[in-house]
Length: 465
Image 1 (cartoon, rainbow, N blue to C red):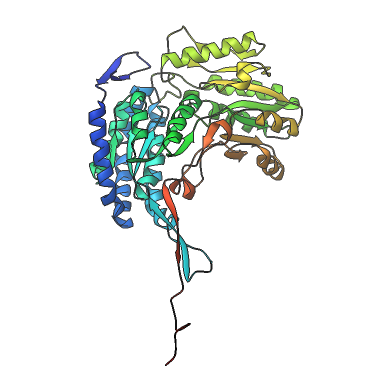
Image 2: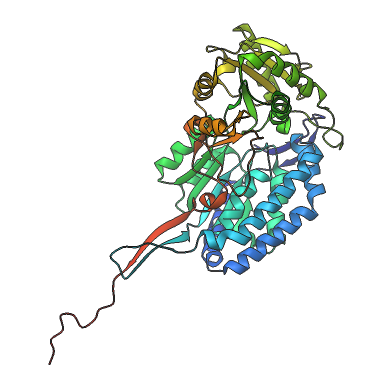
């Protein structure tokens, strides 16, 4: 099956790539495996130099990269430039800090000297989604490469040009070509790759179903994995919150990447006294977002990445309304089979509705009424997901206390949930396991080796002449 690049705004096919055969894929894997030994033997300074040059190229080529993202998956060019810049920041972050993150850690034992040594594993396979086609890859690649690993990228089939552009950036930065390669393959070859002992670990960002499937294969072959599987992030608004700021931030969070973000706020859990005010203000902010051609700098949100995704979201909305949800803001698709989806708000979201249990991966805000703060936490945790969350209250101490009670990988109090190199990123429950970013992320794909060195022998036990 060919790998196709389609413009979701126009519906036109941009480029078509023949999928790699297993013979070609296996040959690239062999090259990567051989390159791993030489790459891990390089110095920290050498690797850091490559990552810094990659960061510089990401900044230099940000316009070109933003255009590719706009064409392939509908991201507005302004957001695309910001994504390229964020990737550059991540490369610089690990270039500067990786050596410290992976320095030998001395441990006090009965030995003369004992410590934990962090050593690379080898080939890491990355299975990545389309929604942040550069950032999803760089947040794995920057720490993995700095740790001395090499990477193989199986990107989403609708963003092949983004994948190849990123491969070129790493190669142009001085990374040996075999140390990072894009595999233009379908999901049918993933199992073969995971079964090969030369692939030492894997990371996947994607749907719950994809994660479960790939993790099962990885488990069968005793393969280390990191999974980031999205979520249905709660956004708690307490009665004492700054409702105006909360509503404005809620709209921004819901509309990140046209609503197609794992950590976009999706479930707005609002205490009853401020519920009506919050909905009215949220509606005003959502209506103010400008749709349009992703290549137009004035566009604030573009189409969803594929028409079938918009069709699926429409079905979730319609089913939820049939089950009792109330439409507070009408939007959605103009007609089936089109990718543009205007923002919507559903209220009266209750158990038994798809809106209550499923992730809505698009610009639909789901509003739930909470009796009090404790009830808000209960509703937040009544989900199989646990990636990110937000709490809004004027009482920062109360916000922190509630944050500790929420079952998620991150909680932001009075702020927009976002990923950044300094903080670990990942989830609990069905949102996955393992962490990316920070010092935890770079330690996922290393051998955390204990080394125990006995005390030097003295004259004890020797016969004295």
